[in-house]
Image 1 (tube, helix red, strand yellow):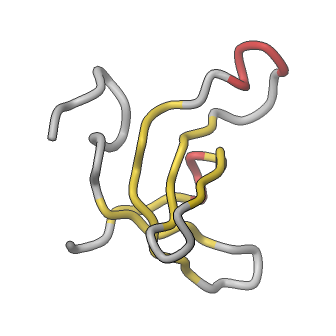
Image 2 (cartoon, helix red, strand yellow):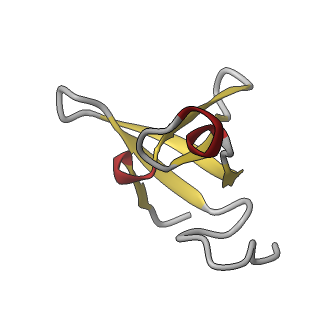
Length: 68
């Protein structure tokens, strides 16, 4: 795994994505999203969900590290 500059996580790091109801969903960090540069808003990161092989861009405030 390699670091991606000054980001809060590194590529491939296991993370939790926090939902508004307080639940957590296991994911893997992919990288920083560029959407806030173009569209404004909170900084986002890209994550993938291993169980469904899909991903999304989520606010960085909703992502926390988890143990492998």
